[in-house]
Every structure is written in C-alpha cells, then in structure tokens.
Image 1 (cartoon, rainbow, N blue to C red):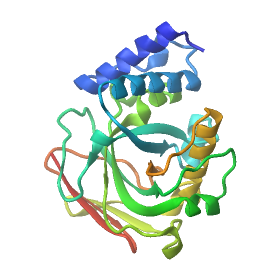
Image 2 (spheres, one colour):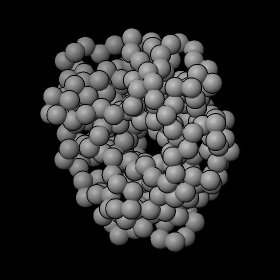
Image 3 (tube, rainbow, N blue to C red):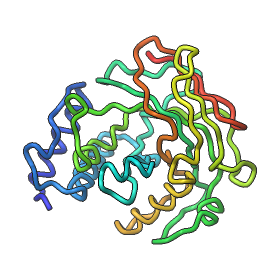
Length: 261
C-alpha cells in the first residue's frame, strides 16, 4: 500500500480537482502500484478534510452495480463512495453545475435507514427491516479525469465521480412495493433518454446495501440510522448541460423534476 505521504499528495490532487473544476490524469499514471485499498485511503483522507471544513457525511453511494461493469473492471463487488449533505439538492429546483466539468445524470433507488445495520452477511430481509423507506433519486456524476480515462483505484479515490444528488417522488415502504421491479424512465428536455428496471442493479437494489454493510463491517464500521444509500445506476448515465430539464419517472413512486443550472 502507498505510504501516508503519497495518500496525502493524491488527496491534494483529488480535492483540488473537485474544488477548482479542473481535470487531472488518472492517479495510477504516477503511482502504477496503486491499489483499490489505496483509493479508499485517499477517499478517507478527503473525508477527513471535508469534515474538518464543516461538511457532513449523510450516507453512501454504490457504483459498478451491474454485472457487466463488474466484469469490465475485474471486480466482484460494487465500489462505494461518500454522500455529503451539501451535495443534496431539492426536487423541483435547480441543480448547480457551474463547478462541474462534464456532468451526467442517472436514475436509481435510494434507501433511507431507520436503524443501524451491521455485520458481515446481512440478508435482504434484514436490510428491509432496518429501512425507513425507499425513494426515487437521481445522481449527477462528474469524473475529474481527463477524457474519462480512469481505472478503479483512481475512480474510488475520486469518490466514485460523485457530484450532486436529488431525492423526490413518493417514499414507499419496502413491503408496499417490490424494489426490484420498478420501471424507470429518464427524460431530458421532454425526450426519453434512458429506460431501465430497478432490478438492473445486482438483480435487486437491496443487494447494494447488503454489500455496503459487509464492506463497512470489514473496516470496523456500521451503516448508521438515518443514512441515505444510493444503490447505483439503474439507467445509463446521460450527458447534461446548463438549461436542461431532467425528469425521472419511477413506476408507482412518482417522479423527480429538476432544472440544470
């Protein structure tokens, strides 16, 4: 693994790119031996800095949640990133993208936890028993790497390309709707841009929560009550630009409407 000085230097690069709207080369260009664990160490160092500035961690996001993407990246579990409170925007309002480089939007299912959840191998039933509600969400991604050239250690260090997210529509109890069979239509400027079923995420979006809890357990952590979990993209990530109107429609769960500002 990389030493503390290298982790700090890489955190400088990532934090600077995110804060100052600039692209950087993938991190493994200068650190070819960098591992995924090193990427998470950079992510942890960025979190430490963000919290020192007064930013609040409110949850986690999953990435690489389709089997095709896992195979492409040579992994058998999703990647995970951090959700900061100040990146959550209001449904029906404007999503600021002035500080972003090449934003993209995707639709997914969010879980909001009612109780702490921990352990190496929780079941879907246990996930649902600990869930307050599920809710439609859109995530705005923004890779900071030049020409979208990155690998898994680099994108993990870049917090899974996280930028903004919005939750809206109808909150539903997991027992009142099947979280694995929700149809999703992502529209941009009134035109259907992507269609998906929530089951595209690992066969069931709760599996992303299961894997997150196991990952946290390995690191001596738990998923706290009140946490938001974005379970990963069900739809393709579609490019967006200032002035676009985005609508994500979720079967039996309402819709999210925002303007890209």
